[in-house]
Image (cartoon, rainbow, N blue to C red):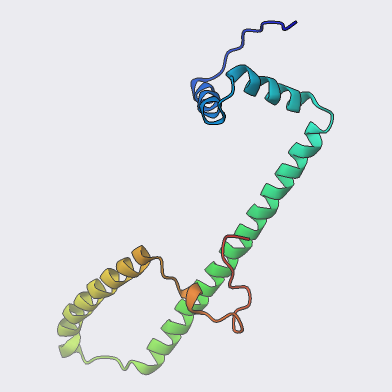
Length: 141
């Protein structure tokens, strides 16, 4: 014999249950029953802890990649600025206006190229060989 229970779900959760029921071709009651059984089972807490641990590990790896990529970006920018400052002589005052106009046009070209490259999915990290930067890894870890 089964006991009837009336429960209330937020609309978004009810929609997820409905969609899962349709996908799996099972009743909503079966989905809710399985979820409650899993929640109440003694090993449910262990499974939840293991799931959280996996998620935390994944987040830790992602944060490490972000730190590495940010560090690489800062180093690349610093290297460029250091090089640019060391090889670019200052301009005479009478040439400043023309240089600023030319600089704006070059900057617009740079932004356009950067936008195209970013949209294509290419990245500096992809260009660094593994033997030079062994931590160059993808998000699929």
